Image (cartoon, rainbow, N blue to C red; front, side, top):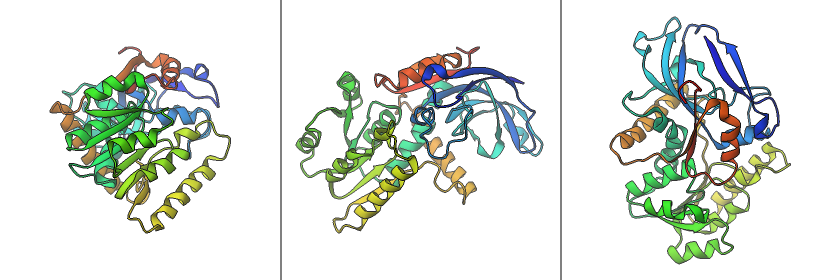
Length: 344
């Protein structure tokens, strides 16, 4: 099988992404060959092209954090029932390709009657949002939360899950996206508002029960200050430090130290860092079961019409540079999807 791939050759601007054709090996024992129907652009790829994603492989490599596709060939020792099935997978890298070879144990079977583009829009974003809301913060109906970046892929999914759960949502975003967020039941605030903390306090005088912060940096301090008694801060990225020149490891260690210090304070607040890959190395079977359970729950809400994936653009795989540029423009609302050229 010859695959079309997008290659990240080094620390380049979006137009430095390269296309190549590569002959894939037949799937080895325990592996499957997948024809990719949809993959997407996430914060991870934006960080990786700068060499600022902790644990990324050495250049050059194929980016692509997740994908949805169909199993077209099996290696030995793989359940024959997987052949022809629609699957989704977290890949971290390698997803920006027309075909991929994956470990069979890492794929999740998903309903074939759902739009693969919508499933892709809810893959990493849906699992992230579900786990942060229900497994980490454990937000309850009637509570109030603050979601930074509410117009992004994770943000638009998180606010819908929260509203369905009976939670009041305050969301920060560019003013151009406020009407769309109001349609989702969100109270929007301009993320550039110099009095953002005061605006949140006007809406939630006692503070908020949880804050979901992808920015890091000084935003975390304000997020922590906005917590109501017993509230939870979930940090899940360092977007504000994307163009920082300091070591990524040093920034991450400083973040973890700050969260640990806050957890020692006698105010009842909880400060956590969310990592979707946590536990995979030590408890791979439990990790995959958790992924399957949570994605199944999210896709059930999609099938029921509760969740509407917010899709900013659908572009061919060959337009990955354009997709990356759009993702970094801060104008996109929702998830940017890449489709294999023949599909697009």
